[in-house]
Length: 492
Image (cartoon, rainbow, N blue to C red; front, side):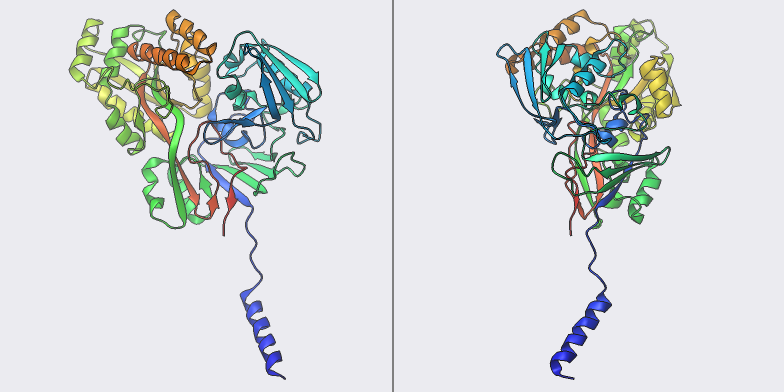
């Protein structure tokens, strides 16, 4: 045996000992706190829906990127008339739904006719009210006619509420969603997980991931253990109180960013004693935001004094409108006829920020004579009782919809605020495209709702993601709801 042969055998033996090269993983398992009530983003208000399907299963004419900018989606380009009333979209060709049916302009018209129909259950239907007609020009061209200019029209087209669905499958999208996105729905194990797989004939650039599972884990301790054990690869929004477990662990990366989630002590403005401005002002004075932020978000929240995201250029800092002042709160309650205070219920959805905030607020309100009964609710019950049936006194919730100050112009919205001036200002804002004018209008609305203490404005919810250190491409900030899979990949 020659020295060369000996060397070759030695190298071969070492390679066998080392085993075959390990392939890069292409699957991801994401832990999420809430299970969606449906998988159709056009038929529900829950953020949990978009977390799973937005830009993954379903797509819109345009999409919102992680900076909040509008990018082409199913429409590759568009033109806008000089008067701002006509938008013509050129659609991408070769697009199919996950059942193999072709996408064209008729699907766009169907989707928006369905959204605007009298029996529509779309949670954000009011945002699309300016649409007066959707016209099919040819199979790859569709035109929208607006009744008035809408400065947020393109952005709103990129929301989960405006994704394109097919007439053949729309009725079943709640349980078996069929879209045009890079991932197709595979299965929904109720109470456990939703599984998606890369859609081979996808019209756009194929994502790096081939399979994604959204695993429902509502308990923080259980999710912590799942992350540490490698049973899940990450979560987009982890409980702030447990972040310390991962912050100095090289096996994980912690991404802290901002969201569009205005966290409020939502108040039933239709119901006594909350119909009285002095009562609402007293509650505003009783709130100690910093104590709530430290206790409920472990310092990660940003205080707000109105319903607007602090990172937005239109934001106006109104946190000093009703500073924490126990004596002022007591005086206002006495002037309202509640010298001895009153009792109320505080209904809390099953998210940590709400339940922790509720305990702190109950203690703060007790100082001024307001006794709160805390009622913990599951998500489906909260959506039915509070959001749909308006059966509540107070609740705590993060409103994660972007630029959603328009909800204060809807007297039928669940917290029941009815102010003609705000309604008129919002109508003007919606019809205004000049940025300087839009800024002034948005800030005037912010000032009015802060002064009226419509709700207790607490903090902007942070996004605190925890991920396997070998993952990259996750969104740090959340300008819209969702965990967008197209950008995520494993690194060596």
